Image (cartoon, rainbow, N blue to C red):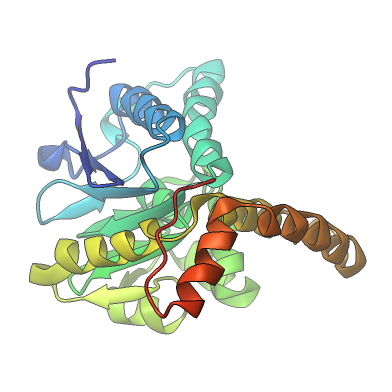
Length: 260
């Protein structure tokens, strides 16, 4: 698919997807939703890509969520179908074995906030702002926000943010655990790509297996998790990357992981 409303580039082994509607605060209209899903599938299928970074074009916004200008006359069946198509993006990000980093360069509002929450790590500019603004247009938080938010900040804080729709500055978002890192705006992409490179230098199969197990921790008990852990660790012990890691440690050098 040709991408008209997002940018896609690969820097070393990190893919960077940039939502490219700065004039609309990178809102998620129907074409952006399709292009974003397509770009994520491209990342999933490319074995040379180890990390995915998602950010927004311009200085104003990461993503303003759904395009409200298209919501005025939604028919009863249409809203559900639109949302289901965007939910594919959420599931693709969460189920992907590669690490996903949201680099929030400005406002992350409504669905834009929840798009960031679907990532494994959230890195924010000191100018970033976050809001669960759904309440202002009388709809519920969607694309997984009701799942992700309490897991990030706790149930009590999640309720407060959802019911008030208030806007959080970046430093408060970091303080409550909504954000992992806050960097000066001018250094945001540079520092974010440094973190991406560090993660990309790790063993990709092992990172993918950890993501898979972490997804299941809410659904299984400790005994089941420990059994899964033992099975997966046995697989890790047989990989070339494990052997390389041990060898590099003994030789006092950095390991060179290849994903096998």
